[in-house]
Image (cartoon, rainbow, N blue to C red):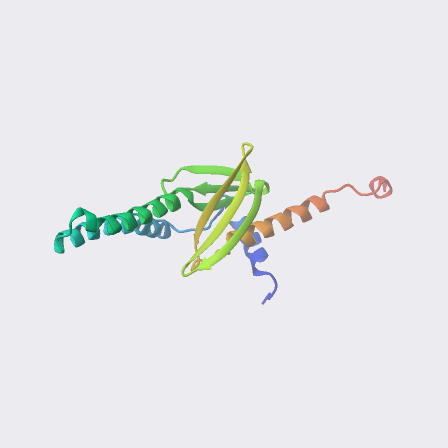
Length: 179
């Protein structure tokens, strides 16, 4: 059993056997769960605000703090929904898909930095990249329970393999070429 870098062997085995489909860093059930959480929380907050106001017969002045907190939480959730992406890797391209299935495609070489943090059952990867001359920043969510490594290690492995591949294609000396 190989106890070396499992990320590189995983990427190599999937890249060769799954080159047509690529590597998807999320599952459909995970995206549905994220949507349910992101859109369920605001609905719950709004309904609970109205119920609290109705049950305790609160006046508008007493509801202002509740409405302020609810509005602040809604604004945070909307900002998160705009920056959350799901990632897939196919060849040397990376595909970012948002919650509404709009996709952006870029090369892995255009990525400037990635940082991955694990929180509960998900991996959060903060990605900075340049596309069309603009610097962009996304939060990529992936399912931690899948057998796919995190985005940061996949990209590092890809870049190392690409560098080794380029190094192997350099022409040799003139003496070895003529021999």
